[in-house]
Length: 268
Image 1 (cartoon, one colour):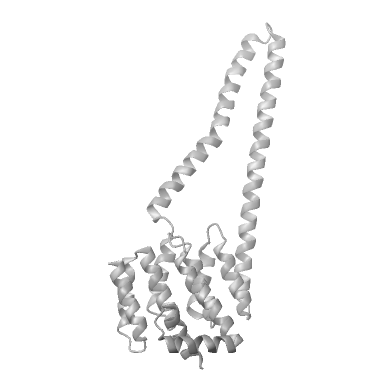
Image 2 (tube, helix red, strand yellow):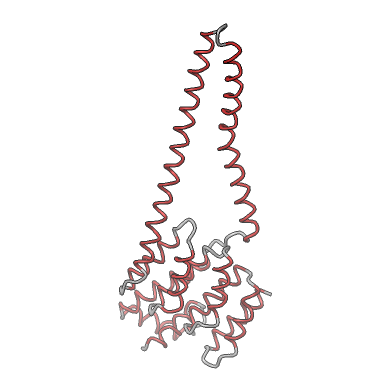
């Protein structure tokens, strides 16, 4: 069985459209050919993974929440300092008025202010250290992803794509590298994994537009269907035109075209 026939059988099997007799023969083929059996298991895992993707909130909602969190964090961090500044101003005034009259109270006040300032400086140092650690981890992860994606081993490139999915916020370099992988990687599993990884950043307009553009450029029937399924989940109306361009192509499988039409109807 050549690779193209195998991929077509995989698609129809996953879509539950193989006739019983052909399904039995295909399962028998998989059981007797370990290499193809392992490949099928990986493809099935990737296929099912698309359905499990949690679609991010729309970008405007994400921005609203982000700025709300940012403002809250800003107020939280600024409050102690505003309070301390006010206290210092007040105590300095009292210092000149009451220094000679109440030396003991003055000493206690200075001691108290020193303790408060020490606590706040230590707390700020701890927060900064946490930010630096998190930033360092993300930087290392970015370098790891970009390095592994250049490796000749498909396993290493797959590790890179999976690692990209764990990033808190993939930057432009990582996103661009994932799209290059989606378009050019010779391994179907790596390309499918790149779709899943990119989908996690679908609230990013750059990612969303890139996924839409890539639809009409795909030659693999599995990627064509997986991207169409993702567009349905995202309810991305901009994807209808590139999907329709796929429908006009003579080299696209009839079963795939049927699924693409169903995807368009679910988006509309």
